[in-house]
Length: 86
Image (cartoon, rainbow, N blue to C red; front, side, top):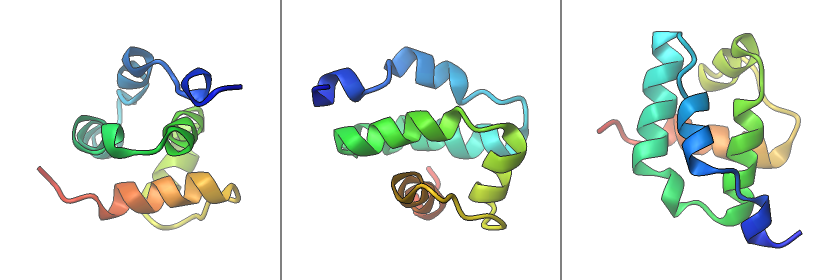
């Protein structure tokens, strides 16, 4: 699969960032708006996989209570947690 084929559809990702939980919405939507385009194709794919996680896991990852077993997802989580607020 080419890097372009691995990249999730950006419009779909924007929709998936709306979780209905204020903490998640703020973190994910801010990251999507300000940092997503800077990611390499494999990191964008990992972000798409992260968004497929259930909310309770996603919240645990982003609040630092849990660590993803997938190293690429763990890297993206670290990027989201370290992303400056805009």
